[in-house]
Structure formats: structure tokens, C-alpha cells
Length: 126
Image 1: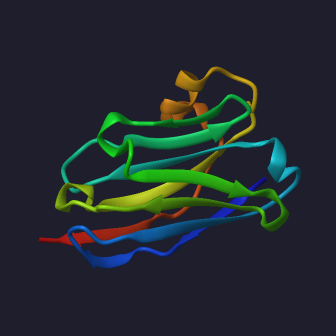
Image 2: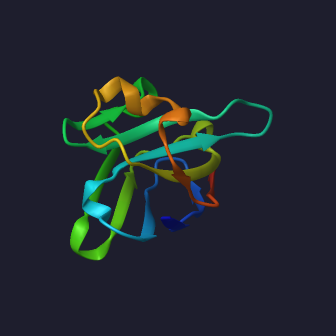
Image 3: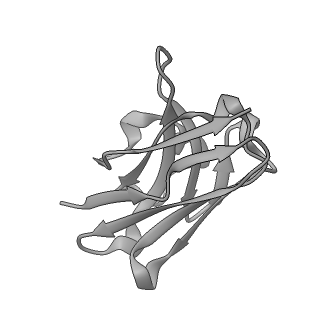
């Protein structure tokens, strides 16, 4: 089993930046596809970004502002968030999938992931 722990959330003004980290413990981290999801109060969980063998993918609302990356030597995946907007306010969770070689669209679905972190709160004030 893989344990995922997010960090880096907090309060930031609109236009500011945050970098979220997700530290993983477990076997063969480099063979897991990784994703970030977010959920705002009263809304459904939505896909934010993923990284796998096929590259990186983003939901339209964050393209050009967010960047997902990973450091396999540190067993960590990151989400760099720039030009933050109030509508980015949500609990952000990272997730790991054992299916590293699926298509990019596969990783936009929460059901595609096997392990989830607790989440970290991101609040963007206007």
C-alpha cells in the first residue's frame, strides 16, 4: 500500500502562488501515475492535473497556471500553482494509480486511482 501526505496549502491572495507537495511512501513510486484533484464546498470533486508515462494533463481552468511535476528520487509529486484565483479555493488531494501506462484521459477519473491522500486546504482571497 502507498501512503500519501499532502502539504503546502494555506491562505494566499489572488494572483499569488503556492506549491503543493505530496510525499509518498511505498514500493516502486516511479511506476505510479500521479494526479491532483480538488473539491470545493458543495461541489463535486474535480480533476486538476496528472502525470504519467504519456506526460502531463490539466483541466482547462488551470492550464497555463498550474504545473504538475514529480521527483522520483524523493518520492514526491508537486503542484505548482501560479496566478491563483478565488475560484481555486478547495481541498486539494493527491492520488496514485498503479496503471502507469494508460491513456492520458484515463487519469482524469477518480476511479482510476488506487491511493489517496488526506488533502490540504487552499484558500485564495480576493
